[in-house]
Image (tube, rainbow, N blue to C red; front, side, top):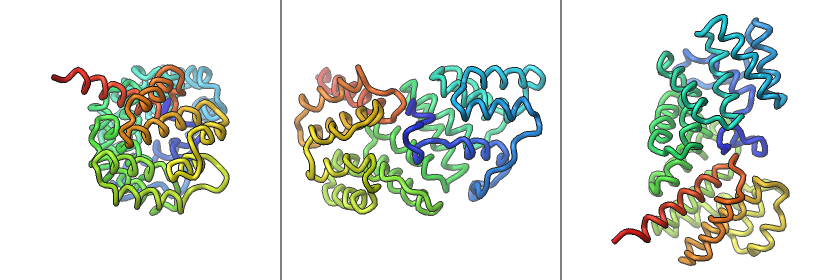
Length: 299
């Protein structure tokens, strides 16, 4: 993910309180991080706008943010809220423009850089996404999600060695903040396989096995990669479109690693046609399909 706000996976979302916290932490140094959620602005319209956004009323939230901006075009809280809402509505070009405007005047705002990168990622502009995520991690390095987004982008670019490094860093940063996500280990696993580093790939998979969530997604994905269940069983565990997209992508990645490229392509094609655009795996499957097509056309 829409790779911007993934409602089904908290560890890969920018939760609303974290987003709000970023607004009031502009002056934090790169080594500082958010320890508690701040109070909302005293502007009642802005407070209501964020409440609407959190409740899922994106259209109503956008109207409120724009009303605040009609009175004060430089209100940072409203500018960030507007950008977040555009992303939630999958209006990525407008989200990118909004975040880009923020970083022009607030060049050290880590969340705005990450939001800019996510908008670019969703538009499949991986060069711009990469530079944005690198800036976000430079400004706020103790942030697992920032490094995870960087790793996804590097996977989409085919920079597998760098993706493995970013994924490992994401795990370290999640751990430093007492957060947990096995997705960076899944990225590292396939990144190592792509580079032929089977030993480190197995280390990453074992770490994911040890830390997988109990009786919840993506535990079945890890079981499938460990050969405990087959592809059909993995698909049987999905409960929504996001999980189905992930399942097909990971099946395709495993087939690709085993040099079964035609079989992998069928799963990537399914994702490209029917997948949930909110998840990172959707964009990765599309990018790998393009890479394969370019490779076939090469002399």
